[in-house]
Image: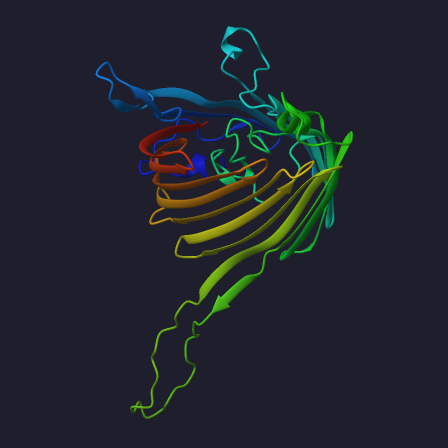
Length: 361
């Protein structure tokens, strides 16, 4: 709410705040609808015996419908949660995950004392950078896009402890159940032996860097001659950076992520993440993603993302993805995101326009 609730080309807000009880209880709604050609192009034969390519129909689907709530019990201790509706939830099936291992809810509590904080509940472990777009290849499986390694809205029962003694350094360690991870990796076909519990750790360095700039001159010549320096000060270039790595594993499964990013005060930012996962036997994946945005205005943000996914199993599968788009915030809580996506696999190349409507209330 702190960002999307106050950003828009037109400053017409439906709600001034998401507080249900002032400074105590907050509620919210996060929903997305996407228009695209869902599926992959298929080669067929027409009535004349000629080979043609059938493109999936252009249609709209609800990508996300999530209700969230949070409560501050006392300073330093809060509780929060969210419910994710699925395609069949409207027919009475309350828990209807789209992907194997996806959780239909998240609920946790968090407390902070000095540099140490802890959170526990049905929550997502810290794994690399948590993506905004679930089509990012870094958590996907090039061999089967319908069964990503870590699905959207992934959550497990467990807990984490975080330590941040300085603004530029943070680390988390935790342990989690593997019920949903088992569904993600082993539904229909077993690809990874798992323990009942998983471990995770992440370390991040977040230095703030400054380059150049000058202060106003304090030189003053009483004779007002050419030595008088009235050069105005100039602002330095400020970079907020991120460098880190994480590990998430259980028995034969292990996923290691490394990431780096930087953002300048002119609205330009970029980030790169690489992920390597190992399962039972010879099933491995190596995925990477580079993304950049430029906030020309708070409400107008061109974006680009380049993904590469590779899975090595009984054979090798490759996927490349290029996404060009604009994040346009029409008014507080309303984002329209037109994009052009190019997907390339070992079997086809498919380019298509898409559009996403995101409501954050």
